[in-house]
Image (cartoon, rainbow, N blue to C red; front, side, top):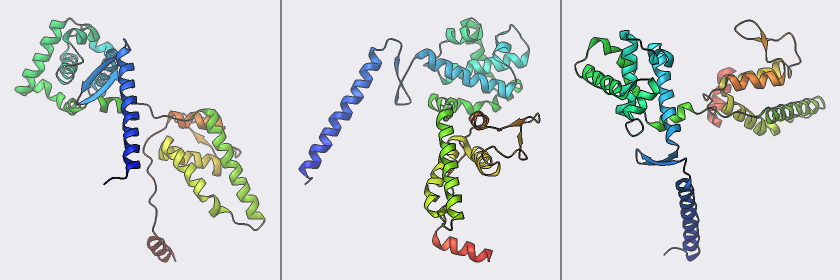
Length: 282
């Protein structure tokens, strides 16, 4: 038999969270600019126009990557085979894969074509893929995208959050203060490095998690090798040979423009691994 206090606690939580969910859904339903959509068994609330544009811009970018044509190219009254194929493939993917979001008329509006042209374009691709027409072999470069869901598209299009300059400068200031304190203590015969290891690791994980591996390396280089930007003999240059990351503001700007999500927590060695590592060195 369950503890009565536990039963009461669980009941309270159920009521609270149930009320919160109901409140959020009611708020969304009352918002005239919002549409409640069930897609892939998941409730998603967003404006229809916003969802359509996310999907359209995503696949438009893939068309440009795979075929080399921009939206301007696709909208022109150009009947060159390659452009027509790219345009028809885009029509096909939008209509067949995301029919809940795109009518023939909507696709026509986006590509400056009438709805009958879109219908014809979709039918051409269906027929071409069925009979493996050579001019549509390029579709193979693009076909894997048809399996994507709107949620995968949204996650790809999300920008990696960064740090405000004010917050970043404060982090740099505190890291420098900590480094100075460790140096002063060491000169006095006191080794404080082990006491500061956890906080140093936390800062490294923070910078790496936001800016990626290259971001963390650049941050450490600027702080410790370039001595907080003071050394003029160490320089970082762009592809044009112009010096960058001279100041903390420039460092922040570079990190924000080049951030990545490729950082993973480093492997933590066990005592046995550490001993084995040391034995191999010595």
